Image 1: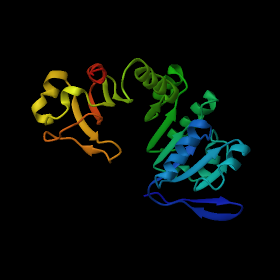
Image 2 (image 1 turned 180 degrees about the vertical axis):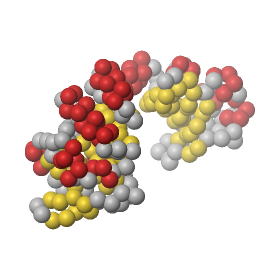
Image 3 (image 1 turned 120 degrees about the horizontal axis):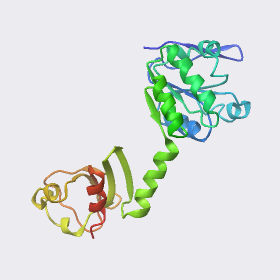
Image 4 (image 1 turned 60 degrees about the horizontal axis):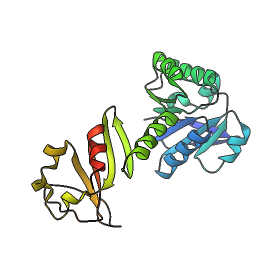
Length: 232
């Protein structure tokens, strides 16, 4: 369990010992990530070299600090080595991203997530040993492409070739128990959850009966899930 202290204006600040994340880089992606973590109850240390970005996030994050993340001394002063999870969200300076990840790895950070702006950048991060390399723009582009070309209401590829798709319940499922439809055998997907109108989502099972206007979540191979979303 990590323990660390940060200092702002000479006063000590302590972030919660558990469930805390350091986000380095507070651009559009880093900012959205940090704020979403905060909204979920995670304690967040934000780090950026830009004084404007630091000031913009003052009061929005547990702690926000202006620092050069490519310098090990600066990171040690922030007790970054006591965090279990660090996200490197630097996107506008590939060199700074690579140097920051290299320093974090040398400090023995257990889990590092890093944003890559392209495949070459991502390959370098992977070769360094970064634990999780993410491609926000690339992944969003692929997701939107699936939505544009299909009838799905939402689409998430949870792994290469396997997807979660939100779609309207096709008519052949209406008024029948899911267990009697043979949908898994005939279409190669599983109906995982459903929603009647504005009611809360519920897990689906063999006894679930869907009606016209219901929305469902289906999981399965990407091609099969997309084909299922096209059914009337």
